[in-house]
Image (cartoon, rainbow, N blue to C red):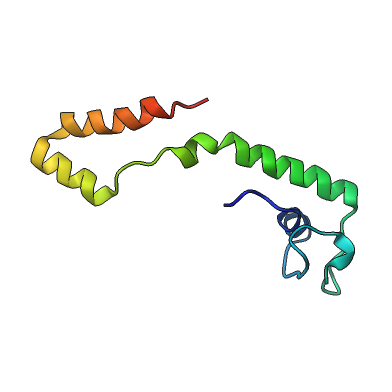
Length: 97
């Protein structure tokens, strides 16, 4: 997921298909008959929640482990202890908050 946008907040609140500008306003969106446009307050609250969730997972996006094929190759050629060192280096560089 990319950094959440106004559109993401509206889509999360409404569900289903909608069209409109990435950064609002809600009046620029086209809703289906059964969809109720959310209030600006609800959109801003949802957007804040989505951004908080996105920010809380930054360490997960930063942690880039070697591709699984390379990991398996390392285990095969160098052994499990060397593989553990490789993984630990990533974990040490990007600790959980």
